Amino acid sequence: MKQNEIMKQNEIYWAAGFFEGEGHVGQYAESFQASISQVDLESLVRFQKAVEDMGQIYGPYSYEKRVDGYTRKPIYTWKIYKLDEIKNLFSIIGNNLSERRKKQFQKPLNYKPKHNKFKTHCKRGHEFKPSNTYIRKDGGRECRTCRKNRRNVKAS
Ligand SMILES: [Zn+2]
Image (cartoon, rainbow, N blue to C red):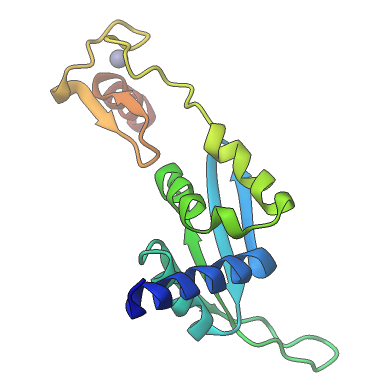
């Protein structure tokens, strides 16, 4: 192995250990997310680099000063929420995670979206041709005609 490949591999081991200790995989309704919250921004930047620059770092979020006078340091959160990214994250660090952590990835990895990609018409019978198809952030499709009708109902 070349020197830079060894270094890259080391970073992946480090990232797996970091996610093992600090990471979180969760489900919110129909979508999933993997995240790490940290006071140490540098570690999150290093992690992001190790996992092919996926995701985004949010923050800093600070807390109100607590009654006991103890102030918590502001935190940063690294986050991904697309299924493809979660799958990719698992393909990078999954082998080096504990069984408990691996298990948390099973739900997103085995997830089958409810919407049928091969349906040609919406439930009200409008055709899913490109000009009538709206692609949501989560990859699901919606009928533009129905969306428009919904908006008109709200406006009136
Ligand atoms: Zn429709």
